[in-house]
Image (cartoon, rainbow, N blue to C red):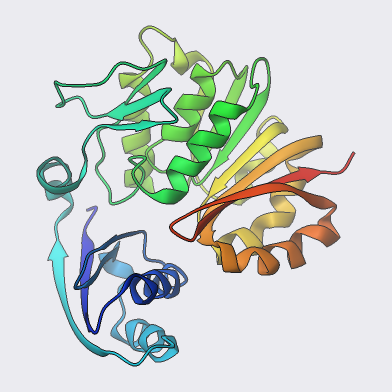
Length: 287
């Protein structure tokens, strides 16, 4: 079952620096999504991955003097659609060109690209700063006739947009089986007019599947710093010479950590963007 543990941390005093750093520390422990407010941070992780010791370790690394109150709540998987509809998931427009909404929304702004996402997990609706930045990067790229790999596809939103933008082939890989099943459903929701389903293959697995798919002209990985650094060599092997690699899921302060692994692999930085300290890093594989 797609159950989550909801971790609530209240800080006294509380500010954006505290919640941002705490989110980064929890992301390293496998937390998938975060909702910050004026009192603290709510974070979500797969229930079977939750550990009190991991939370303790993250709090010990927090470089701020603040009192912390914490609590946890088990959120059953079948409640996620209802919770997103009620509390979080509202239509979003990225770059004035791409609107993302759920099938239950009725008042949807018009845009060049209309993507329907019915989330059954805690991440991947386009609202998070990492996802929206990768969407913006895709909107700026000419994908016509190109091959794209979307590593850690989540709800499938990036793979769907890549196909809508004219990619000849998109291979989307997701390790979590419920997320992969959700991505298949979202692919079907978006495949009627654009015939996206003919250009996107959704694969259930990890980086070990990369040798089985067509080499990429554009490679996407919106995951987290630790997974990216561990698997970056496999990403490079899966790319054509000159390919563009777009990475996100980490903070701007993590760029030196990423580049320390990337440069020996023949990657050079093209540019990077930031939003709320979250980073989208664009690299190129040397020819």
